[in-house]
Length: 111
Length: 113
Image 1 (cartoon, chains in turn green, blue):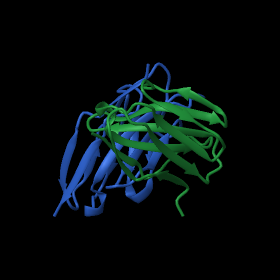
Image 2 (cartoon, chains in turn yellow, red; image 1 turned 90 degrees about the vertical axis):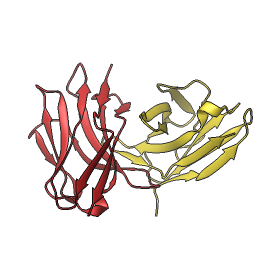
Image 3 (cartoon, one colour; image 1 turned 45 degrees about the vertical axis):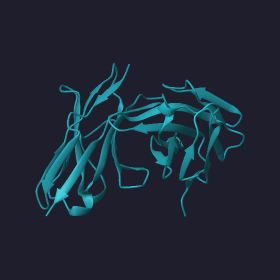
Image 4 (cartoon, helix red, strand yellow; image 1 turned 60 degrees about the vertical axis):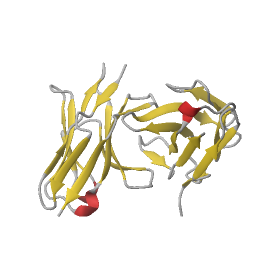
């Protein structure tokens, strides 16, 4: 059973609309991350969290908000989706062993 | 600031041949070094990681990597590739005590018959 579950697996959104990507973990890890994957850029860190009710900005936070309401759940919110936010988004967890555990990803297309 | 360079965007090798995927990093201190693999429509999975000790570290499925401080490199190797090794491979670094990871752009490996 997958320990990091992302939903939805794919989504088509309209420009200017609100998008929420969800991540649920059963690893009981403190750290949770949201990455964005674009061809030729690898993975870039958007937001991360090390405890519930607290989030930190990563390297490319502009246009994104994050929410960690519980140990298990971490959401990425695009308040006003833009064409440039079309990408694959990955959630990952890390529990102190310097190993990231990734979800299967969410493919977002903004039209 | 840390950075990771994977100079080869795509690599094609024949099944049974040996493989080397290159990774160069930049860091002010010796970082943790990682190789992750991404199979189609899946998230990344850890292949191996290194921080200290023997510069050659073994990973899963016959992969190994060699750390070179003098060359700031962490190249991935496999003696004999299988068609199932076709995937995208990412090199990554992190600093001790810093839970931010920096990834390279990835190398897409295609194994042909």
